Image (cartoon, rainbow, N blue to C red):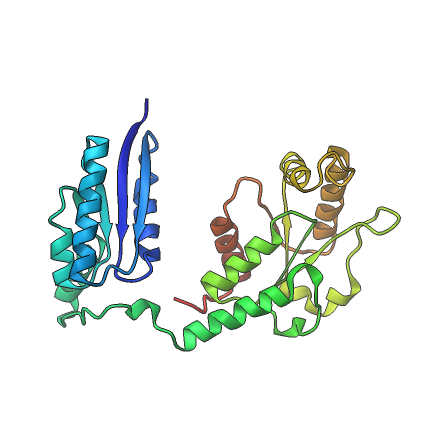
Amino acid sequence: MPLKRSVFFISDRTGITTEMLGHSLLAQFESVEFSQHTLPFIDTPEKAREVVRRIHKAGEDDGLRPLVFSTLISPEIRDIVSTADALFIDLFSTFIEGLEAELGVPPSHAVGLSHRVGGAYSHRIEAINYTLNHDDGISTKSFEQADLIILGVSRSGKTPTCLYLALQFGIQAANYPLTPDDDGRIRFPALLLPYRHKLYGLTIAPERLREIRNERRPDSRYASMENCRDELRQVEELYRRENIRYLDTTSKSIEEISTTIMQEVKLARKLF
């Protein structure tokens, strides 16, 4: 039976940074089953003491002390949470102490500096709005403003990839579906000719595409293996014929797909 441990991700802000770092570390321990709890906005002593109580309760229920990943900035709040009977991993101090020694200046210890609402935040919202307005060929206006235009057959991962690029990188990503005409042929859309340099294609294994499509339209021709194979064969031929870079998304996460595209297209991240 796999081991089971309770894990707490604790932050004085959203907890996203804590989760990302913690998940990266925990992924190395595949034989352990983790019960995960994210506790954001722990910014008062009262909240910190309640966190300690929750950690103790989890430890009593499990019979094993929990793991705690923290990005708490306030020394007062951090000191309270660190009294819990748990493995306390202070992700910020691990790096900040070394940086302070190297830079020769003290850190500000100000909460929320990495999540300030300002120019970067506005840029993120603009990128998300652009991506939503140009999803799945809804609108082809202002393609000249796109940083990237993702192509692919239906359900090949275009929309989630574009949204992730907008949210995490600030990229204005449009996507356009490649669908068969009445005669069953997939052709290169003439309206995309002026934007050839912005195009990037996605493909996927026919077995996986059939599985995804079957969830949407069970037992339909749209989801049949024959149709999936035919569409993917045509679209990959189109990519090669038109010299469009493309990526097989079958075994890749959205994070891997997006990062690969950013590297291959040489797009610069607009958000940090």
